[in-house]
Structure formats: C-alpha cells, structure tokens
Image 1: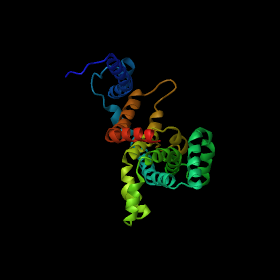
Image 2: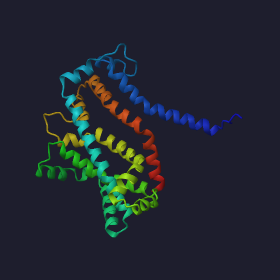
Image 3: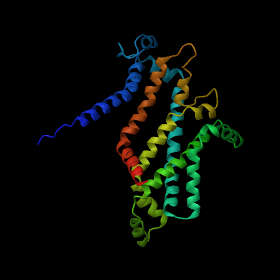
Image 4: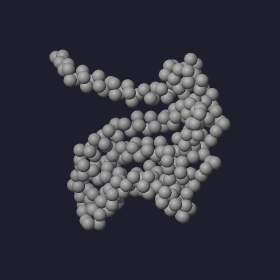
Length: 276
C-alpha cells in the first residue's frame, strides 16, 4: 500500500532541505576557495576553480609555522579530551550515586561555574597562570579547558546516569566486584553515547578556540591553527587563499571525528535531554 504524502511532510522536507543548504554553503565556499589563487577568489568567490591551485597548501606546510600550529592544536585537543573522559565521568558517577549534602553541594558548585562567562574572570585567571609558571605553555590552556568543562560534563553525565538501573551495579557488588571495578567494567561502557557527545562538543570548542591560545601561548612562536590563520587577515588586504587553505586542512579532522561519532553523539544528547 502506497503511503499518502501529506502537505505537512512536504513543507517539513522543503524547510529541512533549505536549512541543510544554508549550513552546507559555507563549507562549499571554503573548499572551493581553498583551491583558487587570491586573485581568482577576489574575482569570483563562489564559482568552481578553473584549475586546482595548490600553492597555498604548499606554502602553508613548508614556509610557515602552520605545521607546528597543527601539532599544538592536536596536543591541546587530544590531551584535554583524554583527561576529561578520565575524570568527569567518575565525578558525575560519585555525585549521582551518592546522595549526600556534600555531593549535592559539589553539583551545585559545578553548575554555578557554568553561569559565569569566561571573559569575566579571564584576566585574573591568566595572572594566576603567570604566578604558577604555566603562562606561555601548552599545559596552562589544557588545565583551563579541563576545569572549564567540568560543569557541563557533570551535568551531561549525571543526566545520562539516571537512566542506568542501579540493579546492574548491585548484582555486580553481590558478586564481589569493587566499586572501582563496577564503574570501569560495567557503568563506563554504558556511557559510550554521552562520552561521544562530550568528545564532539568539547573537542570542537577546543579545536576552534581563538581567545585562549591567542592570550596564553607565547608571542613569536607557533600557536594554534586558528590563531596562525588570523595573521593573514590585514586591515587593508588579506591573503584569502592562505586562510581558506588553512581552514580546509583544519576541517578534515573535525569532519572525520564527527562522522565517526555521529550516531553516538545524537543518541547521547537526546538520551541526556530526556532523562534529565
């Protein structure tokens, strides 16, 4: 039996298609411009390149600090996410499974941290980094990224943990499994969707961050990919070929990570929203 097509379905499809085009156009524009010379970009920005112009990529990779900046971006993102995945689920598990005034106070404290914009305490925080000798190093931003993500991460994980039956843990405890073993062997594997959500959300934020690396990492040295591309934007002229080539290279790891974790990302966000 052929399914009847309702007008609302057609309208929904058209609106979804238009939204997809709006979001996809910047990616198309960026990739097309990456393979053009600066003069061709200025002449006709949205057309296909007449020929594949690869000099921008070659120049960035051989004549600039961009490869070092790529390494710095990778170190900041991977190391920050690794510690987040190690620490935040344990904190959320302790808060969710231990109903006491201390854990409730800790949860409230973490939530309060989400309400204060980073720009409010940015300068004092950077001064503290100078005092402890972490200003101008990669360690400083990593610690700030981790501490800044705890509030959101704990909220995300505690919402998801509400949907995991405690009976599973009680059965393992009766069988003699320790509390640590219960978490890592039983609970943590079940947190895969919400972990993927946090990796995508926090990873994108760190990978694309401009303010922190610009302010904290030392001048005269390679910083991160986004900061290095900023130097090609001038007051009177800009090297758009370098900018688009650099952003295209920065897009590749992001697209690979998102496409790999897309299924778990959507499941984690939707489950956390419903259970929270």
